[in-house]
Length: 192
Figure 1 (cartoon, rainbow, N blue to C red):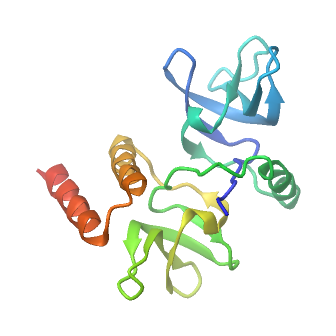
Figure 2 (cartoon, rainbow, N blue to C red; figure 1 turned 180 degrees about the vertical axis):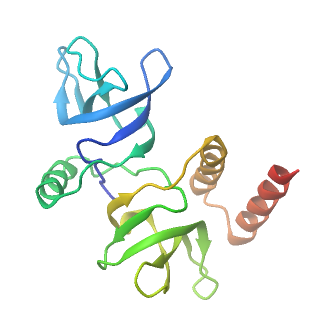
């Protein structure tokens, strides 16, 4: 099953505006229709201006470039998000940056320490490698195992370029050797 993560209310995302500008948007509503009856996953307001009924931003997953701040995740918010998430089963959020803290399916809180991890024993490709916050055990896991995003790590243009590069490999589903070589080449090229 594909993860159907929904950003909590109060989250701020970098989004693509209709005029192709990148803007910061405060998520303020879920599953909303515009005046033409088109349904959107989110509605919000551009930061730093905030509330303006004439400038509501309507967003779907393809408009969200990356999260900048994750809003409040209390028990009530978790229940609401899970209900809203039922309607967005096809959504797969982009790779999170290292330093992000997430809760994974088995209830563990982990910090992401690497992307695109290959388990050498099973030869399986995972989205992430992470350390348990309590006992420092290492976990490999994929996006669909994330229950909640607690904190989003540092993201800059370099990370966005690297994430885009990795996402292309996921689409192509390259083999282990081609992924290792491509990552090695990318890192060496970037270091020059």
